[in-house]
Image 1 (cartoon, helix red, strand yellow):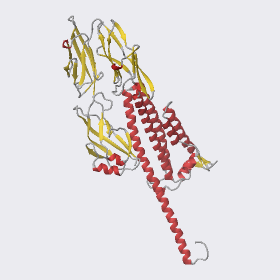
Image 2 (cartoon, one colour):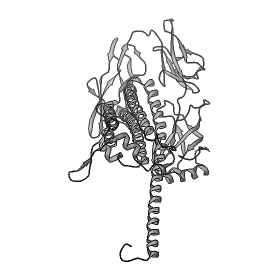
Image 3 (cartoon, one colour):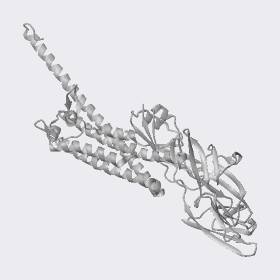
Image 4 (cartoon, helix red, strand yellow):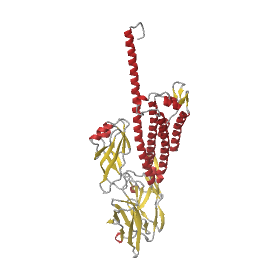
Length: 514
């Protein structure tokens, strides 16, 4: 366009062409700025969702720590330390973002955020980092190091690697020898909206890391719980005291019975138990009780796990052989707890006294068989069961025992038999059913769902009846984007075998993969 002599008309055409190109470039810049702003909004929304889920995870850990302190208090303390570190750093980043936007009249007008002045003045002066800039880099390093320190020895290596990567402040290599400091490579000379998005990404990384840590803490404990190394073999006798020469009868069972679990070998008091007496997760006992006095069964269960033979000590095998019973034996078939709204099986017997000479009494207690009772506890926190019996010599035996009365625990929300935070495609999700179950509860209670609510990011909450998504919910799911977290909550459920209303059923979260 610049070569040769040009007519006045051609010069005018060329000038108009240059102006047109400049206008196109300006419009492209505006689109890029708007794209950054939209990306920032998505990151902020995802961060808020993750923050809410993290709050629920912390509440769940805190509840577990109260119910099982020895197991979960250390994990809960770690989670609290992680939360405190994250909240402190997150608040600091909020301050940085606010300072970056201090001169912006409208924080949502992304097309005006095309200059880098506010960020450059904050972090750089005459080609060097300001004290504010140095502090910013130092805060990132400190957060990373303190977070790893809070996880302690034996921390999940995968999570530690992610922390090092997400909060890395190393210099950026530009060639064989050249490097650019972290702060310059990420923030110097960039449009304001790009720097704002970078801060939002850091905040998102904080919440994502928190979520992974909480999941790892609980998941690691669950993995430990189901390991054979944590099982305990226990002796359970048919009764607690025996007369001299009477046959000793009972069972040695694992603390967590599994019908698919059979020992390869069992040794009791130095003798190998006959394989015909070794059944799924237990050993049937039948031997002489011995003479009057204290006795104990000792030994080991042997299992194979991952090609390694695991030995489990038999504990709790102490028993007494007594000349005459002195008190009744009352035991709850389902632990030393009875549950409201259920028929709790209770065994009441007195060694040496026939069942027709033994009676049990308590509010809500009724007899259903030989030594067997059913307790339907009233609305109170504790109940006492009394047992009365008549010894062969005519002497009366009276014994009472207190039981805690508890409500049925809250069900766990399910999506096709899976709970917690799930990952799947929109197409797969739309075919799933919502359910609920009582995990690790001593009774086999059937739970069924009558309705639920679903929240898709950017869409209003939708209520569904039954277990399937309605048409409105399916349309909302189809609009979800990759990375969106869909919440299924307010799950309404009922028990088939009890009139008690279930507590709040836990929610299910689904991260959309495609």
